[in-house]
Length: 187
Image (tube, rainbow, N blue to C red; front, top):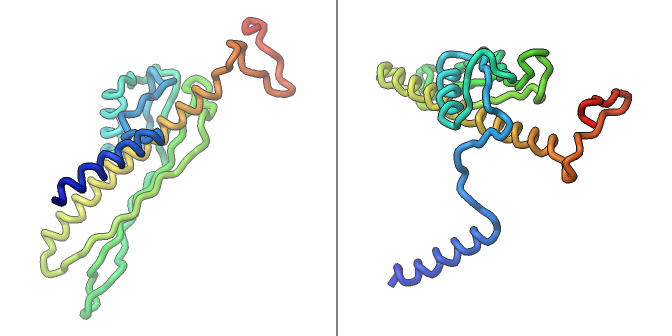
């Protein structure tokens, strides 16, 4: 009986969601990035980022026209709760870094410098230090993975913005900023 009532409800929900334009998040498209150089960052962050970019069709090499700069990467650890004996009972891990997309030749920023910060808490058992150490290691790896996907989503959004900013309806070149001389080859 419950199944019969649940089926129309699920069907109705799927129609409402598809009607409002909802769709599952797919793989990033990186519309204006055929090739990219990646600098900075720890091995864990760089490796995940390089793998995901290459899987999305972006060629990653040192001669690319744009550079993804990752810097000021920090990993912090602090005790947020203690037990009755004053020993750590809960640990907070904080991971942050800055990223920016820049022109490889001129080092001119294409996107503003952005920060990604992740915070995770986990229970720490001083009686079972090995398991607590493993828990911390798994939490760190999870944070690197989440940071990689946040970076890729932000990079995808930034490249979509570049695509929209560079496009015009009539095929004319983008407007020249005030005080700048137009490029005669573009007219």
